[in-house]
Amino acid sequence: MTPPQPDKILLVEDEPTQRRLLHVQLEKHGYTVLEAENGAEGLRLCLDNPDLRLVITDLMMPGMDGFQLIEAIREREMRYTYIIVLTALDDKKSIVRALSLGADDYLFKPVFPDELHLRLAGGKRLLRLEGHEELIFSLTRLAAYRSGETGAHLYRVREYCLILGTDLKENQPSLGLTRGTVEEIAKVSPLHDIGKVGVPDSILHKPGKLTEAEFELMKTHAELGGRLLREVYAQTGSSYLFLAYEIAMYHHERWDGKGYPRGLKGEEIPLPARMMALADVFDALVSRRAYKEPLVFEEAKAMILAGRETHFDPALVDSFLRTETQWHAVVAQYGEESENHEGFFAGVAARG
Figure 1 (tube, helix red, strand yellow):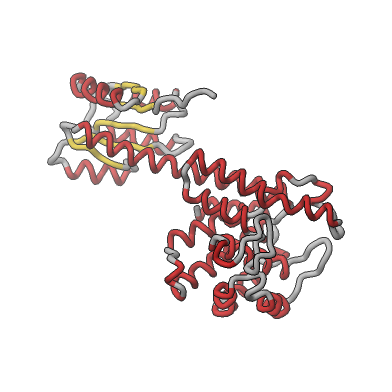
Figure 2: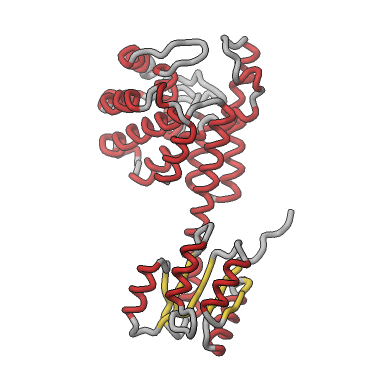
């Protein structure tokens, strides 16, 4: 494997001594530094280096100044660029103007090495999160197109998980859910069947009932998806992807221990997977399939209640009952006629 390349950074500063001092500090922290004496030269380097994501720029420069450079970068960038501006300690007006134009952070001159390092570390964390969002979005598209699941199905399970999580946060505080975790669980819920990429088309899209052997092969999708997402999580360290791993791996486990792939029982099953199990089964019940017609809401509700303490966590079934009007509204708004891949993906991109 090719070792990771050093982070590239653009330094725009018209004063040679200041530029040299910053260049040395940045190289000590492992950056590959590109230098520019003014905004016009800096913009050219940005356009010539599309992989450039970090910029440090002075504000007061001849020709194109830092303010104009910020505007030009924001108008032309294809991927987000993290911009830190340099300014004098007493120039608060310039800071406000720069931030309003799209700068992300600022440093006062003279720049202290430790502060410089910490500010850049914050910028890199933001850029890594953006990369994780792009990865999740791409995996969601793959999951949907490969498994044949529709945009409306993926949207519905996402909404169900959000409804469940919000209710549990309020009514079951011992579970430790936060608003952020609830949103992350909902965000990655569409990846629950990503493992179906490893299931043959002849089984995945068979219109009739599967044979016992075919069903055993179909069941492997949970472990396949779990392993895939765990490997990606190991590379990124993203909390989103650990939740996605738990959901993909364990959403076919049952509260009574009769599920797959591990036969986990009760609270051995991670909470996000228990939430996904209820959401996925409910949506399958109210959706049309090649082998069945959709059930009406009350019929589906009765089957969910019948699965309390066998298939489903009883606390989640209680949550379903508290919020059933919200589930009904999701079914009504995003029913079979709403099936649309691109609409769902546009919604994911917009909501993040």
